[in-house]
Length: 302
Image 1: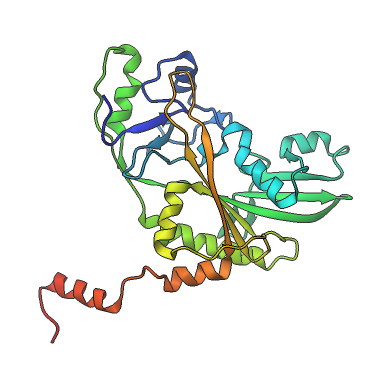
Image 2: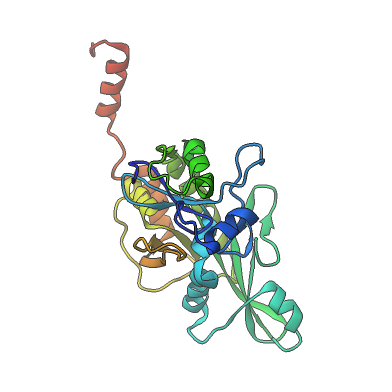
């Protein structure tokens, strides 16, 4: 029986999937999208939860950034083609190191799962940097930020019920998940972080196509609630932000994974994005603020 609030994917499969493929990953604590250990732990790191997605009022939503690397980092490879051309071949760091004498003109990905992230001081780290190397020199690079959404509350009881399912395979009803979604993080952390990094990249003479941003479409809609619809740019420049949104495909049978589908690509000027965040068309008015204060204190305006 489907719950109103539920977990939608655990270790890449439906939470009630008892197939060998799914339960092997449960036992190993492995992520099928990066082929490494899962990073979704409980607060004291004693349990590997492996939760990729949950339900939301707006549809099933990805809560782990690694879910956006499905199909052998297809989302990253798309950016490489958009920045450097369709014939460009992307090499991850280990492959590049093994073959660097033969790879004189190539694109190399630097990130958490490929070499290491590029750090800038103590405050900024870049999720991914795609580097073009030509004649043993750094010719150009592009930066990619990856975001999903954080949750509030917990889904411990629901997860435990699915975890125990192999011992009780006839169970059909499961506790509702008690998760919420941290939408406040969109304007408190995600948008300011994106603007700061975009400004840094726009100042580099080696960045020619600006900042790229990979995000679930449901989450990006929350950005648009704040900024409104931004005028689009046809071509990427060092002053643009290119947003690539994704959504999960339809439910599939057990032993199979839902597809990760590109949904839309939007491109706009970083300055326009920053100004709309500050002055946003959807910001409350001064009168609305006055009314909120009066409601809270229970008094009328003098």
